[in-house]
Amino acid sequence: MNIPNQLTVMRIFMTPIFLAALVIDFPFHYFVALLVFGIASLTDFWDGKIARKYHLITNFGKFLDPIADKMLTTAAFLGFILLGHGAGIVWITFLVLAREFIVASMRMMAASKGNVVAADKWGKIKTVVQMFAVVLVLASHGTIDLLATYAPTFTALNQPLIIAYTVVLWISAALTVISGVNYLWKNKDCLGLKDL
Image (tube, rainbow, N blue to C red):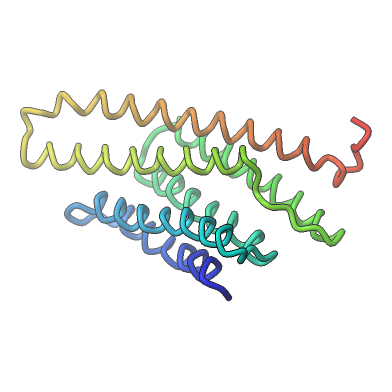
């Protein structure tokens, strides 16, 4: 249990705290959720950086790191559904979960053959964009609540904020699909399709 793996485990334990801050209505809860999510996201950056720099990469870390990422981002999307963000977020969450179920199944198949498959470049890009999208949603809704309470004359900013985070959410959904297809293609041997 080296430092990178400890940071990964920390991210897992922070996920329910983040989700509680997101869905429980109390003053400035979006900003509290944003703070927790931001700290958790930074552990994702630092665990990988430390592991690579000090040669602390382990099979346990390769296995757990992407799971921790999925838990954090999926918690955010499920929270957005609960808060009534419309049909779009339902479809985006479906794409995210479908991709993760498929990739998790592939990982288990690889593990049954003694292989541990780490996240690739597309998976990392997808995760970064998803996290950025979540940050944008949280910051936007925190700002919208703040304006509604303290500066109602500036609520004209609400619509541009909603449009901005909606666009980024759909970009993250597209990258989710692309990274999933790329993952399947790179690991097609696990499905017995190596001749494709």
